[in-house]
Image (cartoon, rainbow, N blue to C red; front, side):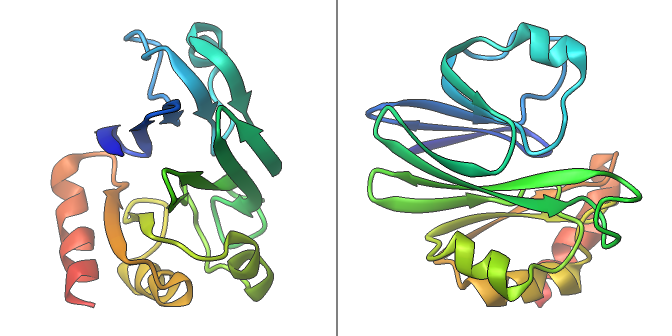
Length: 173
């Protein structure tokens, strides 16, 4: 599998059965044509209108099988107030090429036992840290709960320079 980072929570996961793009960034560029696009948070109308999806755009909880990619989507929130401050978030777990890849989106709270169980085994974890998402300590607790083999910190501060302290603190955890 080939993984490409576009910025913030936007990644491309390319496997032999197609291309998955998570959280396309904005309407300023043309998103790649994808077989599956996942949206962990509600997109702007401009972004949604520009999505080039050959198969399916996923916007919420459920279980899906598209082009030999198995997807589990779990409702979470972008804050620790059940979405009252920043709204909903969807965590996606993909089974691609025998690997379990978990994209936490802009998760803003610790996962509960039910959510951890629904996610299941994780080989590669994209974990947000800093900004309005998880603190380094909460990101570390989330990593401990999911026990991934590979961790990809996702810097969430508005400016790259502001993300470095949070990512550095997570690495030290």
